[in-house]
Length: 78
Image 1 (spheres, rainbow, N blue to C red):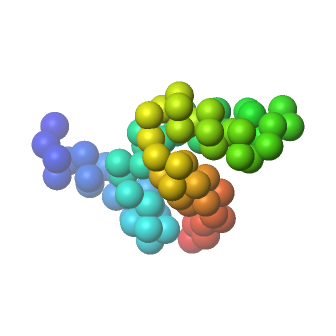
Image 2 (tube, helix red, strand yellow):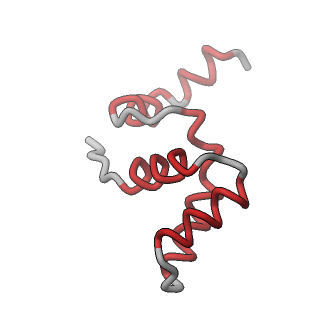
């Protein structure tokens, strides 16, 4: 399979992601966001959650806030 073949097969979902300004490299933050959702559901404060995620995933505080905001944003799928 070539890159072209892969893009051709997943053209629809890729277009939706592109229209929503989602960067494909954001996939690396899925576990981080799942951890955020779990901790939020358990009732932890946002400040504590962010501090934990910064330490656990070795990313900056601004990155964690940016990912939370980006992944929480609603997307229109046409």
